[in-house]
Image 1 (cartoon, rainbow, N blue to C red):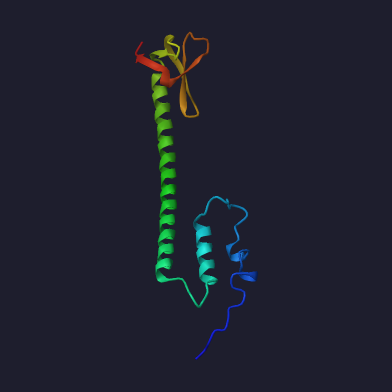
Image 2 (image 1 turned 90 degrees about the vertical axis):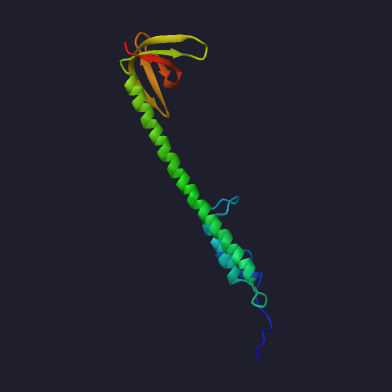
Length: 155
């Protein structure tokens, strides 16, 4: 019968905490976050350097794989939500632009936060970031946020 008398280097030296297999990537690693690649590196390192006399139990290994699967699914959901957000924002910007363009030539009343109101024909509309600005005739080049429009009617 073969007998293992010892495992040299386990837990220290060449295979200790400074092992290249689990060293963080310097370009994209943030000490406060563990991503998918870091989780895989840790799992592989754990399997590679485990004590052969007392290996990881099946339950622990299955639990870690389940955690990895959950992490991957959450990362995929995050990507899907980012795409959905981008599409929604772009659709809202187009809708806002079309609404502002439809107001050109119409009579509009704009009410400001201080209670004052301006009425005039919408001469121009332009997008500025995530809002549309309207310029009314007779207002000396002032532009008003489309959200301040209280009423729109045909002249």
